[in-house]
Length: 159
Image (tube, rainbow, N blue to C red):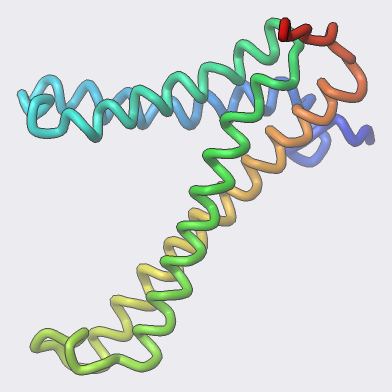
């Protein structure tokens, strides 16, 4: 099995990266369309602008594959890496809050209720982080494949 395959060796990393881009784009597009159809696009303008930036970043994965240029993978890898770090930080914070359960955190709930809710959310976030790490690793493998095997023409920057 080649190092350039993912999903238990079933598909090539270039195709895997494209599938991940589609899986990332679909919910983003659904959210944007639902906001527009509900007439909430004005109040959620900043959120929609951020989602449009994510659409552009995910679309660069297709450009990287089409142009055979590894540099187009970098925006996705950077943004997803930041997202993974933030999700892990929030998960650790929730775990700490659930373990200590300070008085201000309870808000008229029992300690057990707060802990169950907090640990459930932290566990769900860890699950999301695992998926993101897997997706990040597939796109990173595509990046390395494109960089080392395909060897695109060098980009010349005029000074």
